[in-house]
Length: 116
Length: 112
Image 1 (cartoon, rainbow over the protein chains, first blue to last red):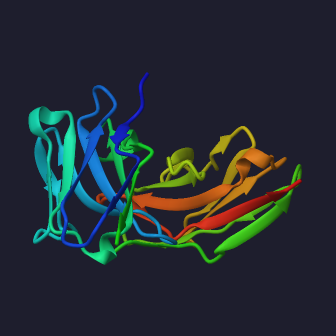
Image 2: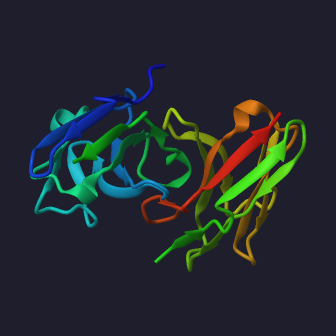
């Protein structure tokens, strides 16, 4: 079974530029998550989708971050414009269900973003 | 809000020895799940072990086991017969009716 796929693996941009990350979850997983992991910290949830609807985006900086999950499969996370403090690893995860015993989240390898 | 605390930023263990990583959490929920994830330099978070709060029996997965103390809100991970491949960041995580909340992690080094 294929895992969660993410691209690119690395991205270097200058501040105020735009960047987009792509995620393809495990087949059949209805729930998709985007996390931001700043160096030295645990991942922090940015946004959670159930199929193609947003369940939780309370920690997403909506003035610069946006995400979509068209057709309930692939997802894209965008930052526009980027700030220095956005430098982090962006992790995508998916799970069979939102909560309960099936909420085991499987993670991709992440995208390391450096904003100069 | 639920919080997860890992008080050991770094730990080291000799190969073949046993090490215990600590985790405490704070919650008012009665039904929840606790996890330990491993993050090697490749960055991919890998599930190590899972504990359901309503189960009194401690979870075990091969060389990995937990000591779950619900009243004390403690969830420690024991790694037996440590191997070089166990070297990684280890994150404790909690979920109930809320999104997954992670601790800050413990960096484990394994000394040959």
